[in-house]
Image 1: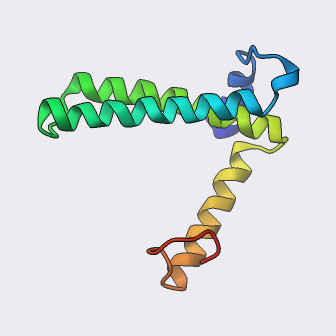
Image 2: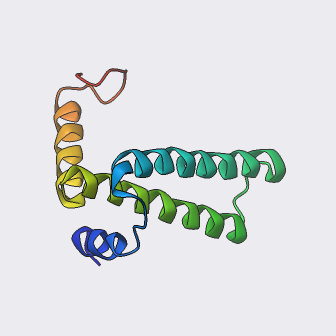
Length: 108
């Protein structure tokens, strides 16, 4: 499945009011990213950092939810996930070439 195919299929399941376009999926993305982080925290706390098959599956499920919301944010912005992915990799390659992968700040 391509990113474009995923985005189109995910859009078919987007059931939120047009009035909350962009806002709804952005808030959902933050919530799902928090759920993912919480599950990783519990692996550290309860399993000493050892990732069981069950914990891995739970993380994969949360990543799927994160991906769905990322797709909806992109759709509501009128851009493809393909474009988002390509721009992100171009930015990272540029930083790598300039020795700027580490550090902080958007414009490094």
